[in-house]
Length: 340
Ligand code: IPM
Ligand code: MN
Image 1 (cartoon, helix red, strand yellow):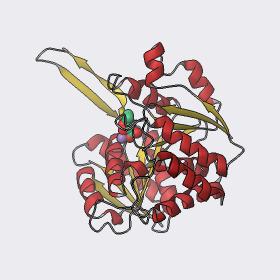
Image 2: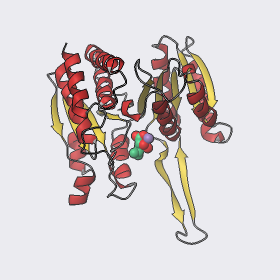
Image 3: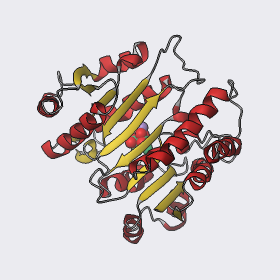
Image 4: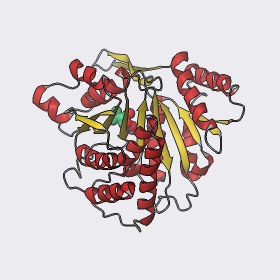
């Protein structure tokens, strides 16, 4: 397995080091190539993602990314020029974000109950497609538009993936989240697509919620969800809520998948570069380690993925509320658990 590694900015390199520690324990055959991309490179050279680097990344089986973002870089430059460019160029149309409340993890909810949802966010369309513009800039008549792009092809493939995942889980339940009462054009495409694909999966029960109501239920009744599918921006927002109720962003893993296997998929913690705690060795690498688990699962290494997930579950259940473990301590514990 050839893995490209983009440690990135802030705490990115710290959590990626621990993710790789665990990966090497469970999959010693993996070959890693580090790529220097992110704020430092941009500040040094003005480069975000040179085409030659993108071509090299394409030669790998998968990519592991730490975090992108730095207070010294104007907002949007690294996001558009690096992170989103990777997701779009590599056709990462499924953004997979499990949210599970592990035993031993404190949820901010008084009575969270069992939470185990698989959020599937579309990754290459919607409001992230960059359609729009500005006219009469810097005048009182300025008009700015952002147009959400939704194609039948793009919606169908992510909805189909969501059904495939739902049918393989014990509860076999899928919720579409949208805002069909207001976004009537895109909403209709999403609803019709879910209805059509549902006919092929009679075992899966289907629910629909508007995104505002869903955001409330994520907090008041998260146990009702199994698989959820939604568009790019709604998915961005609700997966932060899902992360919050399952113990915080330090535990939220993600995979940006090209399910066709044409391009390498990319795995990353949902959290950002956290410049406020960078360099102190206190970032929780759990989300990165869980992302390594998703990576192994995606590459068909189910046994290795299980080992990683079991190590995390055991570690969390035995931390005894200790929130003060250092980044390397968590990595060492997980590596030891994985090898045993
Ligand atoms: C995420 C992040 C990104 C997104 C940003 C950094 C562009 O919030 O991965 O959820 O909006 O997708
Ligand atoms: Mn986000």
